[in-house]
Amino acid sequence: MRRFHRVRRTLNYINLSTPTGLLVARLGRARPAPGPDGLILAYGYRFRFPIASAFTVGNVVLTRHEEGYLTEALLRHEDRHASQYMLCVGLPMLPLYLLAVVASILICGNQASWNVFERLANLEDGNYARRSPWWSRGVQSGSPQKE
Image (cartoon, rainbow, N blue to C red; front, side, top):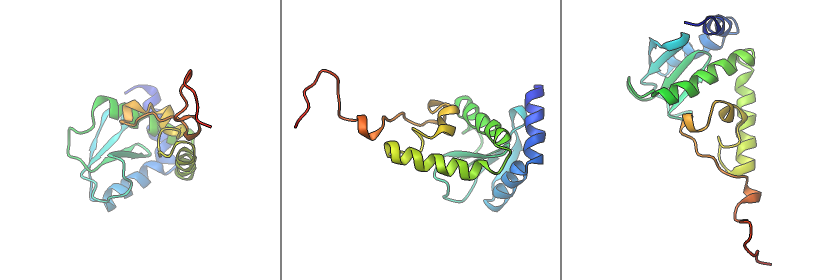
């Protein structure tokens, strides 16, 4: 494991985001297992919230699916979220993330496309589509607009 990942793992324990992720995994009856780069992969999460196929709290990546579901791209995406928890000093990421969801919904009607956290984690790796802002849809360059 690289030094960065060891530092991230330690800081996410200290800032309580990883212990919170382990608590969420336990409450959701997920089965934690060691993952790459200091991540903890928790399979079989049983709650319907959040609606994402996988989500991260601290260094804990939770999914409703069974082992093998977390592909390389999706795991890279969730790994970036673990780093975001470190940079946000842990649990403050949760309300910041919710604000980013609201902003994205207001901008494009989608929870992820304009969510700064999802964009920085690479939308495509997280299986999210890019959507344009609502004010630019339907406007094609060179085509006449109805009045």
